[in-house]
Image 1 (spheres, rainbow, N blue to C red):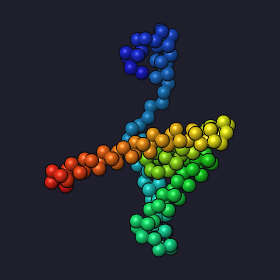
Image 2 (cartoon, one colour):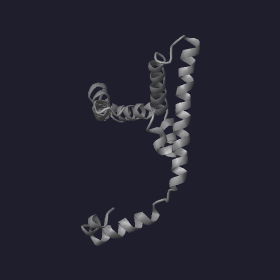
Image 3 (spheres, rainbow, N blue to C red):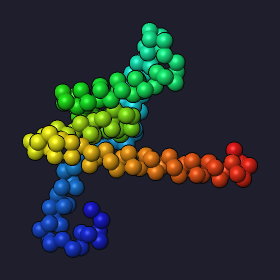
Image 4 (cartoon, rainbow, N blue to C red):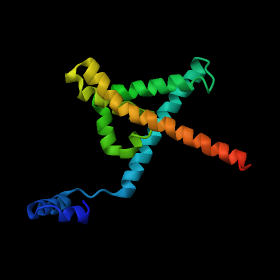
Length: 159
């Protein structure tokens, strides 16, 4: 908590914040980076394995194997989330599990599972798309901005 916000707290709350900071476990940044790198790499290798599988045994091309590979990775992410495995992996690996498509599947499945008591339509359907909507919107907007920047560079003769 910043010092500016800390000034607005009562003395008891300030004391609690100091106690909480002292008891918070110290995390090693290099170790967290290594774990994220390994976990993201392993997830990517699994994806490459499925792409190779589709290309070798089902005569897909590299381009056409991408869609079923992504579908399999999403199914694996949702399945591991439902079994409670993905959360433990994410706790250990951190950002390495949120970057690939399986992290997105985990986020959507977690939101759906959390709100299933509210019903399938309003609970599961409504709340899982509260998470998915902003992510998809950001992805589309980022692709648009990237395309505009690329067109500007091409028009200037840069790329």
